[in-house]
Length: 168
Image 1 (cartoon, helix red, strand yellow):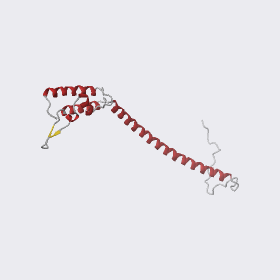
Image 2: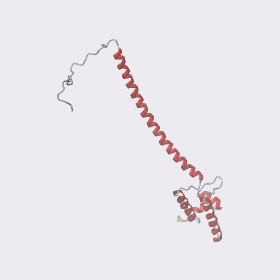
Image 3: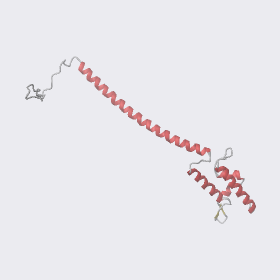
Image 4: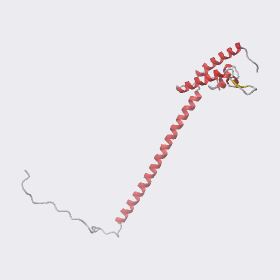
């Protein structure tokens, strides 16, 4: 590929800037995205112009439209930081990622609740079984109708019945 004239380069830069503005406003072509590939296609230039070039001697030089590609990437990042998504698919991806994270949190909470309820159910069933066993034991004919009081009971003093003085 040979050198291009300054007029053609200026025309290409104007086309790139116009395409850049359209893409950043969200005017995407069918099947296109808000990226350098679509920018190059919309401007009618090759995508390689946005990337550095390597000379035969191994030195690296800037691509003819690399400064515009960098500007496009900066402006796109600024829009994303501001919460605007020029590409509706990117916005949908971000929304779905947030929704997925929320659903994962809800699922974890549900699993925790289920574990707590399962532990509670197990405890309640074991207590009910113990109570049933106690009731069955108490109703059995082997137990005496009136259980004998424990051997060591403390006596409680009786209430006084004599009145000392008046209560006025």
